[in-house]
Length: 171
Image 1 (spheres, rainbow, N blue to C red):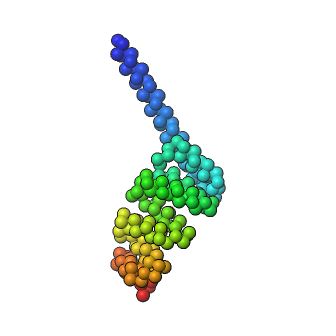
Image 2: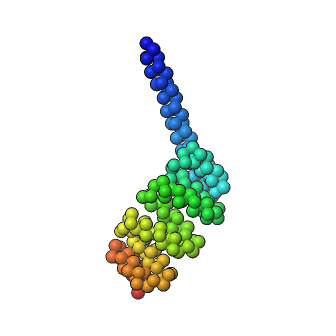
Image 3: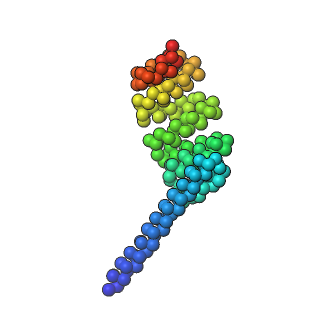
């Protein structure tokens, strides 16, 4: 009888803990969705606050880090955006969006070496993406590495023969 009572108490505690976890997940999702809504409305500062609330509940969600990075980028806070994108990549290295945004952030800030690292990493994940190949070709061209540039433009054209920009850039 004593074992049954202990089992019931343990089961009740487990159910309460599990219910709290479900409520936390729903609350994190609520804050995330509110943040996305505010981001789409152009209210970036309030979106950041919502994303921060979501991260307080679920700090290991790479999508929340990517969204808060986008809000920070639009607020002109490149450093904070970069920090969150790096966290997102650490959490999920195969998720393309975080690397793409980080590469684009580096391009905007004219940090071409760092952008090249990100787009080469993207190419390892998705080797047949002609956009990545073209961007890498452009980056090599900016660094006056003509042979590498031409090689990537030609690879982009081979992957997608309708990508005339790559072929024109190679000439």
